[in-house]
Amino acid sequence: MTLNFRRATASDIPAMSAIRLSVRENALSDPGRITRQMYEDHLEQLGRGWVCERDGAVIGFSFAAREDHSIWALFVAPGHEGLGAGKQLLLLAADWLFACGAQAVKLATAADTRADRFYQAQGWQRGAMKNDTEVAYLLAPHLRIRRAVPDDLDEMWAVFQPLLEGGDAFPFGAAFPKSTFELHWFSSQPPYVACDGGRIVGMYKMGANYPDHGAHVASATYAVARPAQGRGIGRLLVEHSLAQARREGFLAMQFNYVVGSNAAAMALYRKLGFAIAGTLPQAFRHRELGLVDAFVLHRFLEQE
Ligand SMILES: CC(C)(COP(=O)(O)OP(=O)(O)OC[C@H]1O[C@@H](n2cnc3c(N)ncnc32)[C@H](O)[C@@H]1OP(=O)(O)O)[C@@H](O)C(=O)NCCC(=O)NCCS
Image (cartoon, rainbow, N blue to C red; front, side, top):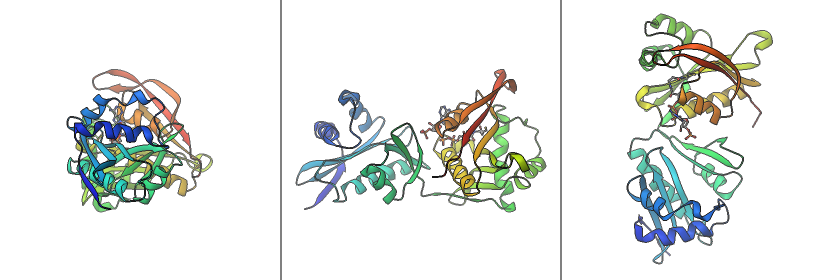
């Protein structure tokens, strides 16, 4: 028995669709939800697809989506599991996304299924639930998050300082001095950096929001280098900080001042379980939008 892997073409769509409809887990609640057009779009324009053949018949397929660096589909026909087809199809899709410049590749799958166990076995990082049924996964083999050291200061400043020029995320203006940045990042809450190879592409600091009677609640600040934004690094940093906060025994995480118009931060935090605990009306003077609301965000840190 040999397995043959190749790029998917439009003529594979009926076979892929039949496999998609035959699986027992991650089944489509509405079979009309994934259309022929969606397969066609993902073959070239929105991504790439691959099939696995056994004795000339398609037994599995995968698709990578270019725009959000995600695995759009990975399915192996019932009866052909356990042959290594899924593993290889996943590698083909993920490797293509890394070759396109992704720092992290993501996917979502139904929790507590065979697929859920499969992705963990392939070394993917299991993240938060995306909704009632699906769990998020990330693969970031080139990214490493570690404690920052004083020698990282210049590179961290090179990430942070350009973000201030936007005037849309932090209260500090463009003239905020490096010496105060150093004070904020190296003398209160412990800082962490995300490194792509040897290069710092993001960072966070996390620690108690208040001392003594408020010290069981953590707070954190995140920053991703502008060119590296939107590739999953922010999600990795927040998930890392949540895990770290749990390890340190914090019971909750609170962000004191999130600018409401900061779409990336608001989307990310809400996806990771934070709820708005309070509104600070017109608390932020946005460089372009004028006075906008800021929010206090909060979530409990149940032990996993
Ligand atoms: C906010 C910030 C940390 C997010 O990091 P990022 O690497 O850009 O975000 P990611 O690529 O990890 O995206 C995380 C999620 O948010 C979503 N998202 C990202 N940008 C978005 C946007 N502009 N609008 C809507 N959703 C967005 C992504 O789709 C992703 O969702 P998914 O994981 O379910 O697919 C980063 O953009 C940043 O440093 N911004 C400037 C500084 C800042 O705002 N810090 C926070 C201050 S409170």
